[in-house]
Image 1: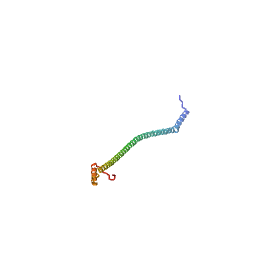
Image 2: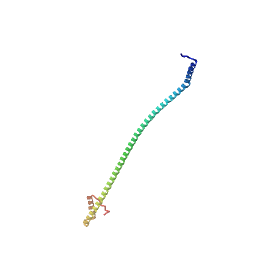
Image 3: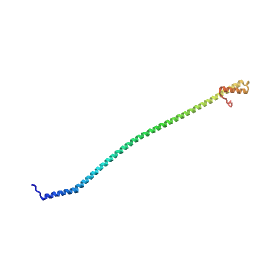
Image 4: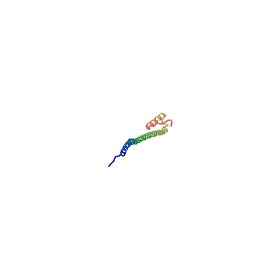
Length: 166
């Protein structure tokens, strides 16, 4: 059968003491280190997760800002186009007004020149008629009758004669 001797008992006691010593001085510190590392790894994973979440939030903000910038750029372009169109219309309106003014001035100048030429022609006709009447009636009429005949002729023709030119 089994025999228990003192050596076996010392060996078991040594093993138990060795186990307790190893447990106290080796296993507990190693387990503490392992737990600390595990806690540190968990903390780093949590930090990494938080950093990833923050990065995703920043990315979303940047995408929103970029979309807003695109919209703002489109609005700026639209406003610039509107301003350019308004400026074009203003320039065209000013050009049309200037053209109208030039046309009015040209028409007025033409009308003035036409009136001046008509007056010249009337004066020439009146002068020719007066000369013809003077030649025909020079011996029969005196100066006063000659002047009244001339005035009546001018009233009927609607013109005036410049006596300085004759």
